[in-house]
Length: 99
Image (cartoon, rainbow, N blue to C red; front, side):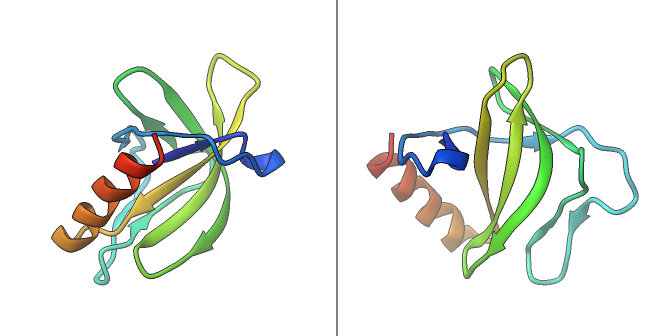
């Protein structure tokens, strides 16, 4: 899930499935299912790319990072869910209610 206008606290959200194009040895998943992010790593959706700027927080379902939407001046927050089936279902619920 990508929350637009994260810096200003806006609640508008758009759904995206992000995949990483990073080749760093530090990216990947750990034993708890958290994706290990690397600063300046590039996350890709079907239509956009996002550069990871900084880590914002971690919770039960995953973590949130501040990103720059490439090709624009937009700063967004991206929620990255843990690699677990029940968390994927929760993510789909969030996408449904926060279009």
